[in-house]
Length: 236
Image 1 (cartoon, one colour):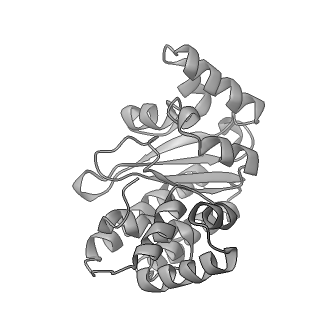
Image 2 (cartoon, rainbow, N blue to C red):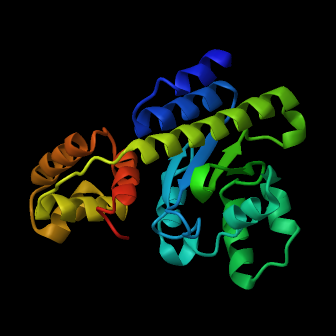
């Protein structure tokens, strides 16, 4: 574990930090996890929040990309208000829920999302974030040492991301078309979707995407969107 913690200080790009946190938590038995990065002062369920998720079904992720669904998720805000680990079941039952929130929790249960928990993550300059973890079984079955490790990894990853973002002051210039592709990437659109919207071929979209990744110094959509939000390149 100490090697994993020390490794964070040697990681110099956003994607590598996210991947390390994911891989360490997987090795500890986490079957699904998410990290929600919001611009400062934004709501953790806004569409400007970038969600890095692993282990959730494609159907659930597509549903969560819908603004009319995501906005009724009270778990991130309740977790941050709680200030420490909050089991999903407690988030469902400790507060009085609106009909929309009850519908959201019903969708969670139908998806089998009931044994996980939320974590508030704290960083410099008010950069509070939210993470979720799920071992696929009740928390009482998980060793306290294992829970402590995944909580430490999540917090260390968030702090490293915050540091990398604060150090990143490099100006990045994108063409109008690259900027348009990036805007739609930030909205979660697929290559085929972007091609249709911009009336260009999927191969052309891939070319623009490769240029965007190169200019931003990243190698996937999550890293590109997080950095673009920080630099003010996209506004979603």
